[in-house]
Image (cartoon, rainbow, N blue to C red):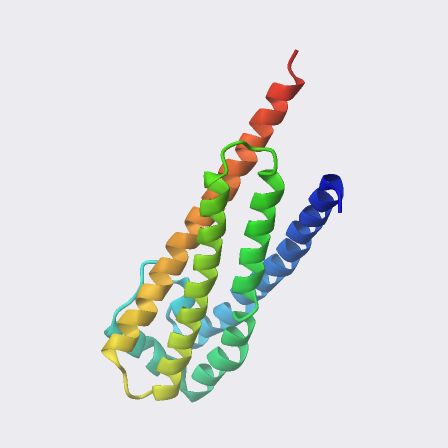
Amino acid sequence: MTNRNLSKHIGKVAVGSGVIGASIYLLMINVTLAHIEAVSGHVPFDMRPFGYGSIEAATLLEALGVEGRGYYLSHQIALDTLYPAMLALTLIATICWLGQRLPNRKPIRFGIAFSVGSALFDYVENLGIAAMIWSWPEISVPLVYATSSATILKSALTTLAVLLTLLVGFNRIRRSEADVRP
């Protein structure tokens, strides 16, 4: 495969996974997470980038009721098993696509690492939320702490990965403009 064909392929992966990821995200935000918040009157675990404590977790789980907890597992967690991989793939493909000709590879390597880390912590968060729901009405403070920590790390790594993707894109545009100038 030539470099030009590889570039086109990476670009298609970036766009395709981005469309799928954005569709899943919009579905979660507008349907599943909105439903969880409407049923419980509380912000879902997934939407608390600064974490939560055991009292907040217990309050949300209690307010959800049996049907709401079941919905969280069957709808939100189900969708959120696809989303982290799509987001990571989108970010990685975009970083690689835009960063092909950049001499400094560090932002690309960090962006990839942050993207993978974000997905991994999102999956840890999902497992923790599922474990909290399954063990309800028992509430394990260490489990809540671990799940909340995963939420915080997921949020931070996602932010860093997106910022690095934007930085690589900005550098690509800047280098392209410099190449065009006489």
